[in-house]
Image 1 (cartoon, helix red, strand yellow):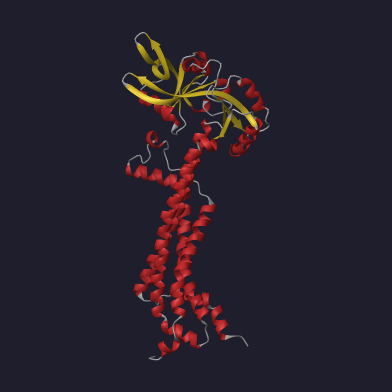
Image 2: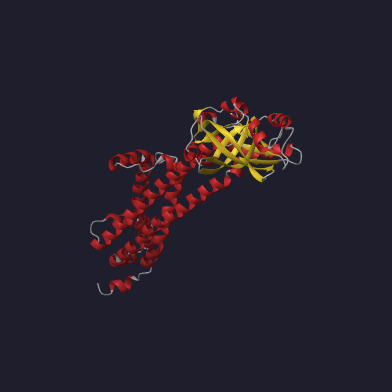
Length: 420
């Protein structure tokens, strides 16, 4: 003969769901339950959408910045690298290294009349650079090869050129970190350069980056036949840290080896930290909605005291009663989480179209490309994020049901039925 308490416990989910969606509940309790469910929908949908947008921003940032920078760098000491061609051949002998290019980099000041802007001037070999970075594909006007035609020509980032008010063919003055000694005193060295090209990648490098030919850079910076270091392109961007570490072990002392995760890593670490912080903030919305379930269940327990007492007298155990109210709370939460998940996925996959619709409706540009480097909200829906949001929401909802369920299980049937 089966245990009546066990039989009732097996029906706990059925009874709990009946309580969740019954039309015979107190109206105020129904309103609180609806608010809890809507809060769950809003929290889950917002969290999925925002995480997808942040994934999109991180992807845009990674794609644009890493299209310009090399996968790795090998730098010499303060005196630079004189035998860089031999070193380049040694690096290219590695099976996972695709290309190597020399560079010299220095901070300078560009001037056009009264307009002054700080920048980073990088001297490169255009014929070798195109195998290491995506600068040639990012040219808006002119070409990178024009640096070979004129020793003292320069290629500027689009935003830097716009701030200086120059275009291809104009001349600008550069102030270098070198001193010129004259009978009248010591002055910074200045030189006129001709703008031969403008590039744009849609990232911060457009604001400060400029390029000259390697020969021109050696003359301007006083580094005859010397380079600061070598840029390295590997066959796998994400394997670059391991490849550069392997190269470091094969080189003699005196060289500093870095990869893109070290030169640009702080930026991507900041993006990851921002994603975590925003996730925690939005998860608080889900937490508030989840703990609103506490209010719903507490009032439901008060309403169902007689039902609980009857179940206990029929043999239901305290664990069975707890299971009923846990199922009651999770039923409400699951509906909210499910609707929020569907809504969040729909928003995340259509956010660009929604943004465009709002711009046309309001007649305004929400994202000015000259300010934000983007023209629409990027989105990258990752199912791992969706799964994490759903599991976190269910966990918070489960925690919210435990106290009211324990209160329900603690009700003494004799006390309730005494006055019935």
